Length: 361
Ligand code: KG4
Ligand code: ZN
Image: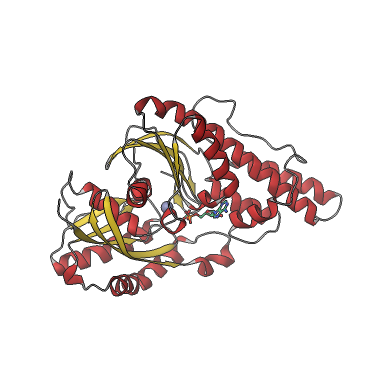
């Protein structure tokens, strides 16, 4: 296969992103990756507001694409294909990206590839570390939480996932409950270092149930109850905040580690060269990483965490997924549609609910 240059576009949540990638499946190089976040626009609302997100994407997409091309030192005439997130996500944002990509593809006569956002995350370890199939993937972010066995560019088996909140969403909500700044993950991780994780009894949801499904909503409610109890007797002291942060984080680590152990037990018989990969903003958490690394070593599996910029939402992963899938599928036509829900594993049972950042797929 010859080397190709792909323009990637991502706008499924609250980051407008464009990237240029060159290479082939298993050996590609990121020429540029621009991510324009919208955190400030949503800050007053306590979550991502879909209409505001869609409008901001529509305003920023062409600027973002121009910057990605500029940073790559290339013009549109040097691009071989356009890849765009076609779902799952907040529909207004996905439509903005798909329309932008269609415009470029049509104007330049380029092939168009609609990519599943989750496939982008799931294939990233091949871009960053050349990981061989099959590998186990744990997606943990503000909007996603699932275990996948990745056996090929379009072969994903879902072993389980959250039945309510994603872990990042829980970190953000708990931070709000105990008056810590957003995003909640980094605030809780920093404060947890000074806290006593054992002071409050917090649940480890669904550990008593077989399988790899997870739940984080009840844990968040348990923190709320403890906080309200403390407030009855006065204010929330700095020690209370640190102890609640530490207790909550320890519970998340325990749940993720134990469910990862079960996912690894299902995956391990498939291959002798085992890898467990993580993606998503929550994978930045060192306590979670350490927990997962310990479980990985018990199964003699390599633990792989791509650099954070490629772990969180970006367009390089979308361009790369298209590059991987090109060998096995035709480009999409101008009838490519944006999909709010798009499960990677069509055989897995549908998930309930939809997070603040869109469908959990
Ligand atoms: O993948 P990501 O950047 O975006 C989306 O989900 O769209 O993930 C963001 C999430 C936020 O909920 C944030 O609180 C969480 O990742 N996060 C963390 C940490 N850093 C970011 N959670 C726990 N510990 C961290 N250090
Ligand atoms: Zn994502």
